[in-house]
Length: 556
Image (tube, rainbow, N blue to C red; front, side, top):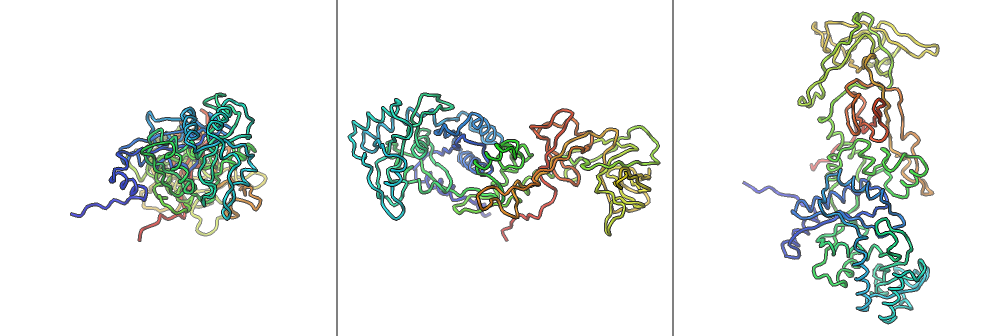
């Protein structure tokens, strides 16, 4: 019997090698977002990758906020990020950390680097520093302050910490190599002066570490083994290694880069989303037209669908884009057998069954999901007056129109056969009421005489229908014209949101709660909006339509 072949991505192969060679005796990964905005679908890949690796190797997963830049960070973003990660199912347990909690230790490392002759205080301006740095074709020039004495550097760095210098006037730089072909290694800045209040440390500090200095130290402090990050940090890896080595860590973390997840025709840039929020084009970072994790959750996507999407997108070294249609495929696959199929009329027109004599409500059986009998069935009310969707009736239908029109017989789903006998219109010719007769022998939707009908339409009973608002979404940018205009602004789609105010749903939905989701027959999958839906005033977001042209790739 042959052994099962287990496919591994390149990161897992590297981890296997490290464990096999004794570089590490365990695996510890982390997800380190900066709390300067909401997480988006691309971050989900990093979260699930890092958490999945820790889980696969029976290791630890750390959640850490890289909060070294107080100008853009807010407690609101900290809270939203924690909620997103928990929702995705990544459990950090007791391992929740903040970079700012390490500021004292980082300062001590910086002082130690000065004592080793590996760091110095510079008073070059930002513009002067750019001029001294050189470019890809020209080496940099030594900072005039590069050879200050260790004693002077220690005193000036302490003065920086004690607030004696103005913002931007002094920096602490690493002393590496101004002629390095990697510009990141040309004496990068380790600390800058910034008199700002920090969301976690308040006004304790007026100097803050740069990301490229802080991040490797945070990893090392926490005994992270594999620092998994995206490809744009590949050129920063030599500096990462220099920091942890110079700081004296005997068995430092190893940085491994992978390709970001790019999604077609979506907006993920924080500055663009921030502007959409500030301009009132969207109602917040969790607007269902966005692809922040909070927005996807509010719209009705499930953690399972996001995890499936990340799995299908794969892990590689090469940048590529995933089709948004694949994300929609994943949520359809998750919901189609797990949610009840209910009746909702989005554009109602009244239908009266003239020969239905009873004024009492008749309760009919309706299966919740034909593909999943385990979901059982429910009772739906039926009566003389119903509502159907306006598109399901035409006065003069085209060929192959099998729904309701004068003289035609159709099936009311789970109910009876009805035949249109007449209709009423208003002064503008708009149909206001459709009159039908029904065949009581066809209860349940089948005819005992074998009579066939080609059309089946859904409905709700007028007496018990529940009013609801329904929101239909399209991409917030115009897919045909591209995401961005020539001037860099967003090419917005004016039809990204359609609000239907007078929809009617069957009464089984009247107590639906936030995030409850259903399939509306023939309309798509819908979710109760968590922000605007209230008891007695339901609001539903369309998660996704029922059909797509997307085909799952095969290996053939």
